[in-house]
Image 1 (tube, helix red, strand yellow):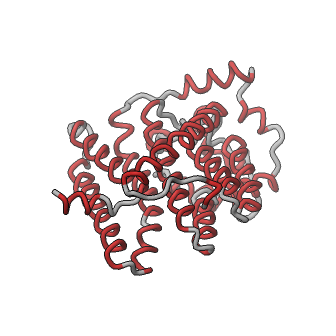
Image 2 (cartoon, one colour):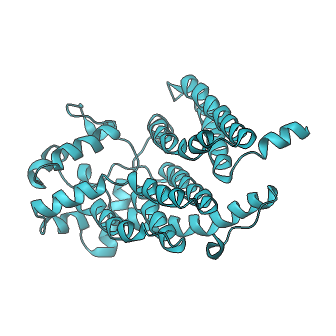
Image 3 (cartoon, rainbow, N blue to C red):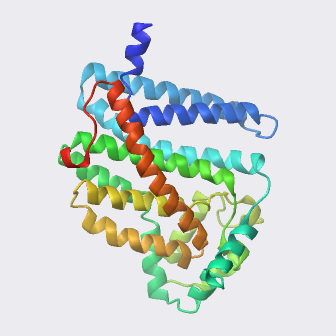
Length: 316
């Protein structure tokens, strides 16, 4: 028993979040196996990921080698992307109805109009180009913060930043099950005509296609509204970008001079580019507040279990 306890205590707080979430995914695949065609495959992969997390935590702790430390921090990046794609195969079978109608009504109740339709009156190819490029930087922003902290060898701050981002991502993923939807580019606008209605300059069409591929609707997909990933509420782009901006300020990272203006543009881009309703952003912002508040307690709870010093922004 003591050896098992020691093995568990090699885990960092973000490892624990990954393991708990992947046990949840295994449970969902088992519970809804009659609806999820790929459930056996995902249970095998999810179990291997849980084993890998335990293994890399053990190897870093026991060897102290820089190689294992780097893998231990950065395995989280592909994990986030893989988890996002696994949800594609889970959400629609489990939650068979979309709630765009409700999100649209909330936006109209707040603003008296559809914000994406309103903004389309003020669109310009140069603005569209800039915002599409910025939107494409979403997954890069947490990496920029992480590299900035790692270069300064601020490992306690890096531990907390990785935990906060992973915890935030997984909370947003859980939120997708609550109110699945496909977004205004399908419901309020013509998806097939977006390159004509909202043109950019050089890179916009290419970057849009990259986003579409990531959401399982590459060019030529029949009925893309049916095939697209259900991932609009809450806005993960808003939530995670706000977390990264917040951490860059509280951790006094010089990366904030890049992250804050780019992050602000990115959040605006989610509506301007027709990916999100404004209520998605509000939901993402509220969940960000909960994530930051609860995350610190969870992180320090695990720090206490490990016999480590409690995390405080001012000390790291």
